[in-house]
Image 1 (spheres, helix red, strand yellow):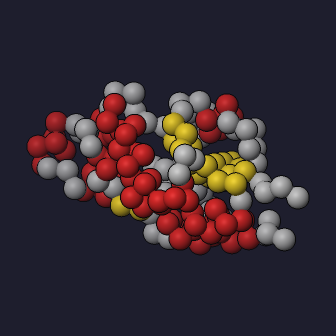
Image 2 (tube, rainbow, N blue to C red):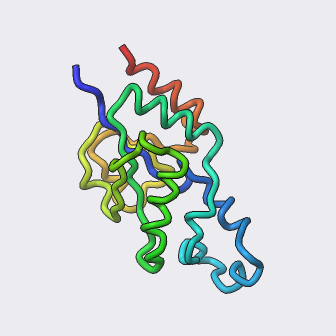
Length: 151
């Protein structure tokens, strides 16, 4: 039996976006208020979500895993910052497994772990696991769910 394919979002799933905001200068917080995702370099400042790194590693051992994220069009550094974040925190497990798209529904697979339904996540043809929603409030609960798919 072939491994099921899982796509994992970054912001709010693997990455704690708020930690990047917390590291901004007061001037940048004021200048970019309401549009923090446009701050150059912000995506390189973010910390992983609790248990995200270990959970990603577990998923990679048991499934065919890709990172599927969206980068703000208005912030070109976000595209490279996200890749650098992946290399720093996930290393070889995510080597050449990063997809940046504003149309997540175009990817074919069994599962998408995302915290929102935006950018095509709500139209994904497989099963959307909405991170943070009831039953999937954190990585430990997400892994518990996926453990049922292990032979």
